[in-house]
Amino acid sequence: MHGRHTKVRPHHYAAGVVAVLVALSLALGLAWFNRFRDTGGTAEVSRSASSSTAVDAELATCRAVWRAQSGVLAAAGSSLAQWRVHVDAMNQLVAGEITLAQAQDFWNRTRKGAAERVARFEKADGTYADAAPGCPGGSTGSRADGGSRDLSSCVAGVRARDRAIGAGTVALDTWKHHIMAMEMLRSGQITPEQATRMWLRSWRRGVRQLDTFTEVRRRAAVAGSC
Image (cartoon, rainbow, N blue to C red):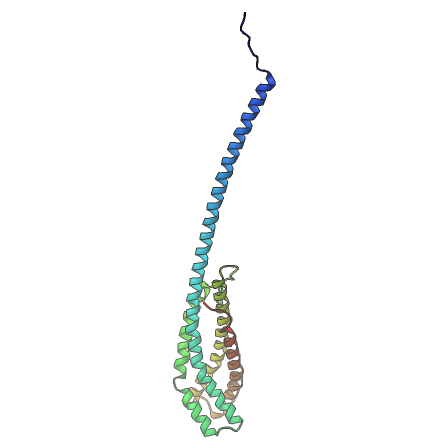
């Protein structure tokens, strides 16, 4: 009796091949997904670390600008304190609260060392001008579009203090010119009449500018900090 051979039917063979191909496809797809996930996660961590480093560097730069601003504002405050006494003496004289002799005593005392204080301000302002572009809050820096809360607060403070420095610069320019006028009168380069006309203009302008500086600096003190 001949042995019985079982013939594999075509549709059984095709089904087996399809099953193998499906299994292979699933295995390859899973491997690709795992690799994509791992790579994507690594890239995301890398981007996050890079962004954090950039923010930290920017914050450090803005803090350096803040320190430079502190020197400018201190120098401005010291010099403008003399100018405030000077114009206040005129205010009191006009109001009849002090005599001309008393006013002249105030003016003579505030004249001493005035030029040196203005020079200290100008030196500090030059240092600040060199540092300012490094921070987006400085007068010539770019705008900060993001970053940490600390950086945002620091930038806001730097911008506000920059405006205060601007107001102080304007007031100090008037004071500086009046100091020069006083020296010109003492040396005989201008007449008392000329000096009086110049002083009246400087006095009125100085009152407005000092008030502006005081207000802008007050707002800067609560705008943000580094």
